[in-house]
Amino acid sequence: MRRDPSISLEMTRLVEPAPFEEYKRSSLMMRYNTFILFGAPGSGKGTQGKTLGTIPRLYHCACGDVFRSIDTRTKVGKAFLEYSSKGRLVPDDITVELWREAINAAVEAHKFKPDIDTLVLDGIPRNLGQAKIMDDMIDVKKLFHLACPDRETLFYRLKKRALKENRLDDANEQVIQRRLDIYEKESRPVLSYYSQELVTVVDATQPPAKVLLDILKSVNDGVYEPAAV
Image 1 (cartoon, one colour):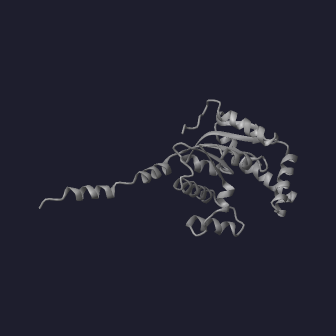
Image 2 (image 1 turned 180 degrees about the vertical axis):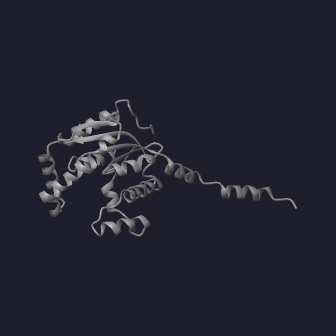
């Protein structure tokens, strides 16, 4: 009995992965070209990240936004809630997995196209543990250190922002001091983890527009050019 060749052809079509599925799979396996915005609380990472995210071929992902949009029905979401609801420190692997899920969702929604876009991160990696876990996921092209050695400036910015957003507890000076101390102890060492050739120091005490200009100058200095459209 002869087999109908059209049936074999149709079966081949069924088992062949769709182009988007192939793209999605390869995107999830690749290391993302990445710019990191790094600095103490109040240094302006979020402000610069949002602005950079409006530029074509740059995709901004803020760790704070990831936490605010957690789906607590997922396995990793439940794990995060288990720790955070008890006021316990969330382990680095859970934090990074939450971030990874958010990036995967952005890829599937076509918001982030890893083959042509550069990822702009702020708020992650927050410590050495997270930086090491993320080595297999991101290819850091630039780290912008938004330097603000004047603590009074940071205090003023954090207090002003907390009052503006009606977060009175966060406006407490002891709370602000604790956040800055945690940054010095846990986050600042990340600066030494990456090659100093990748680090660009930007004076964060300048007006936001001047900070942005300094970042853009560094982006376009020929060391790294975002992929063309």
